[in-house]
Image (cartoon, rainbow, N blue to C red; front, side, top):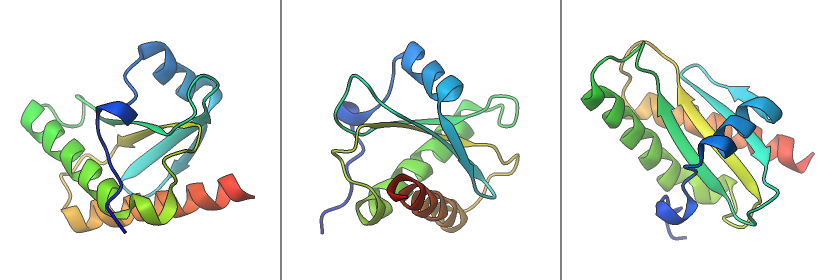
Length: 122
């Protein structure tokens, strides 16, 4: 099966839509990352955003690296848990104050995706 694509077409960039995810959406958490999600009214496909806080990681290079690691973990494992045609907006937030390894970030993403899949189907 091909890897799950994370590209400009399915990225969530609108400030108002990201705010709506936080206000109206639901939250799932793992040990490193939180997932906020809401069903989208406008779009009929999955849209995703990634965030790492400035207060916990002051250097932009560190924040960018952590976002790249989260995107790669989603790209490698998303096809098992997500369908690109789902009408949802997802926001992944890295909240750990330490810079973790790719393996632990991948495990956190997998557990969040599994929890999301179980909540969405029930």
